[in-house]
Image (cartoon, rainbow, N blue to C red):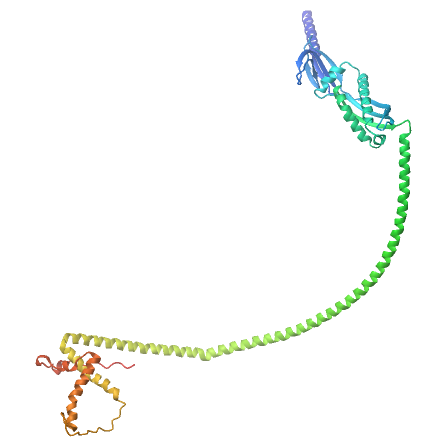
Amino acid sequence: MEIFIGAAVVVLVAFLLMIAIVSSLIVICPPNRVAVITGKRRTLSDGRTVGYRILKGGRTIRIPLIEKVAWMDLNTIPLEVSVTNAYSKGTIPLNVQGIANVKVSSKEGLLENAAERFLHVPHNQIGQIAKETLEANLRGVLATLSPEEVNEDRLKFSHQLIDEADDDIKTLGLELDVMKIQNVTDDNQYLDSVGRRLTAEVVKEARVAEANRMAESEQAEAHARELAQIASVVADKNIVEEQNQLRVRTAELDAVARAKEEEASVAGDIARATAEQELEEQRIELERRRLEANVVIPAKANLEAMQLRAQAEAAKIIEDGKAQVDVFRRLTEQYQAAGDDGQRIFVLNMLPDLVDKITSTVNNIDIDRVAVVDTGGGAGGGGIPGLVAQLPGAVVSLSEQIEAATGVDILKTMRPDDDEVAAPSELPPPPPPAPED
């Protein structure tokens, strides 16, 4: 039992020892400190070869017996910066007091500069180095500014000081967080004299401004009175003009009212005339409809009846014509079938009508009497025998005229061929008379 207890104690001691060893090898860096681990060479980003590495926050493990750990604080170092009898522009000595806050820079490149210069250096010594650097830069900036510029625009002075000191501070591996000028004085009372002069100028300007303001006030008051009187006159004039405009407007409105009354009267007359015209148009329409009912419609009916009768008569005439055409067609067929005899029969049937047509040309000649004069001799004899002797020639002349008019030789047609004469019973009936129109 004692053996087991002794073994457990040994294991526990070994475990605790191992934990202590491991914890001593683990480096944990807080945000306000930097761990500089030395002992092993490495190459930086700028190509330099150094024998340390820097841990900025976080943790790492150092190699035992080879690497050692040193610490640098990143806390702010407050400084009081002051210079006395520093010549400004114009050889005026000034005394300047200010405050500044510096710290070890944590930026890459600057942190290596700080590690190489301030490792194991106390804070107060780092602050003293930074103070001396800032005071030297402060004297350099004062030499470029006049006392008035230093005193009047301290923000500009601080910016110039920061710009001047920035390169030197960064070279040391530090950062300048704040730089403010608190007080600027001089032993020769130069700034007091400038202040009194400026104060006198301000007082003078104030008195001049006050006098100008009083004069301007009086001028403004006089001008105001003038404007008041002008405004009163203008108001009276405006009142008169408005009254005149009111009278003119009243007259215009009266004229417009009278014109409206006249227009209303004319509109009434126009409306009455329009109504009468519409009434007359209605009367005309009524009369037109009455005439249409009493005259036009019966006339249309009569016209339609007459048209129907005419159509009936025309139909009758058309049918009669068709019948006559049919008769003529049959007669033509019979005449064509009879040959030359048919032609002679057709001419003989038409002979009375031709004679009537020829004699109708002298129907209007009224022969009261015919006197035959006997000449007493001649080839044909005179008197009645001579007249009788002329009749065959007259018949031949008439036949020639008919042949010239119709192309038919009546005498030739009337002579029978081969001494044959058609019997009366064989003759076709004469054509019916032409219908009367």
